[in-house]
Length: 603
Image (tube, rainbow, N blue to C red; front, top):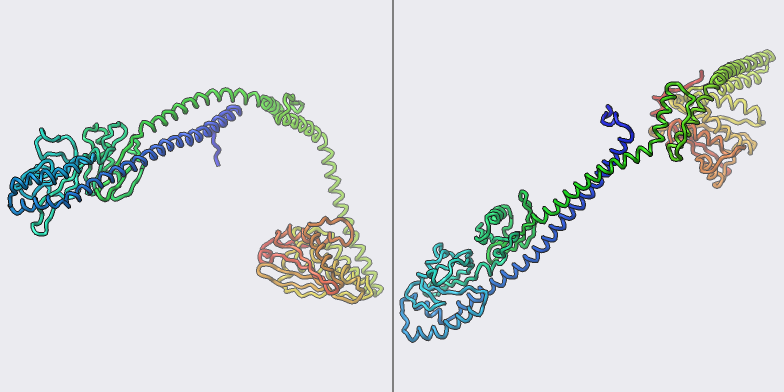
């Protein structure tokens, strides 16, 4: 991988300074980002909370207006005298003067009093089905009056919004006030539609949030059929925002909601309250762009201040780092002199920190280098002497083999064949033990060694000890560390069979288990108790320290350690025993992987 050269040409103090400044800058950037993000979030959440309360107020006001209009409409619909007058007009009958005066003085005044006592209502009017009725203001009017209203041109019934009172001339009514009204037809089972009730409130009364007059707060009412109503006196920017939000806001048939909306550089908190009775949603808009901008301005000011602080810190840190690395530069200069061959240079100790320790260590190293160079010739002499001693050892081994061969020939001449066979086994035993083995040996080679050992061990006892081997030929080619099985046989004889003093047999069995080979060395000797076998297992696993001495399990531990070193922790030696019956040593080695390894042998 090609190393970056960005820093390669700079001094260490510059690198330290840059790394420290970058670390501080990143830390401050993350902290500032989190801090100002939280501030922005707080502004948004506070605005949302404010709009939630505003939404509840709007919903309460709308419900109050709807209830007032519905109650007034139902009261008018239940007026029997009014229905009689409308039926007479529908049938073309004309009331006499006394009936008209009585109707006006009683029924109309009661209806007028009902309307005037409700401050929410703009008015409640009844329009007859034709012009034959005598008008009784401000309640009963001819049909031609209704035709002057814009909702009458479209033949609409139900709720209508944003219309002006044009039933009369501008001298009588104001055409500037925007109204919201409930249009209800009056029907008779005999004459059909005999009139129409218009119960109206001012749009400012129904939707006060549309006419608040604040620059940052405005709203609109959007009906289910897509019509949008808002204060026409708003400035053009507010109108544009409301037109855009009315298209972007998915508010059809939704319950109360509060959302944070970003549009370009503008930030808004938008709340809405849906009225199923009105068939539309009142949307309130809170422009929090200025509040968010203040957070951004504070953030930018903070960033500017931090840049100036980091520049100042860069000079301060560079000065401090130079002071801290002064000893390092002294060491660097001394090492350059050493590189040029001047080993007499010694570093002056100016501090007691790590750099001072480094200078002291380098001085010690230079002293040792001079000492080692002086001792180099003596070391070469020692190496030569070691080679000579190794050659002498090899000569001594050959001398022992030659002597044993001479004794064997003498025994055969004297026809002492037992002695000859014993010497042959001893020679093989010594050759196997003394010659160097590269890597491991095969199970077959280890068995040959054990057979020679058994031939010699039987010379010691008055009773025979037999060796029973049950191994497939394929297992004989597997690898095993040298002298792994012989200590197990020796242990079985010394601790299992010898205390009994009778003829016995050591068994060696082997079989394949999956990808592994299991070799068992067992005897039917005195065995061990549960406590003894537990202690022996702990010694083999190094859970108990193994000190020198006979019978302490050090030989078994060495066998286990060498198998683990050769094949891994999943392999090794396991011991099993029952007092008075048997002792069994189980060796586990790899079988499949074993075959591909380099098998060592006697050389």
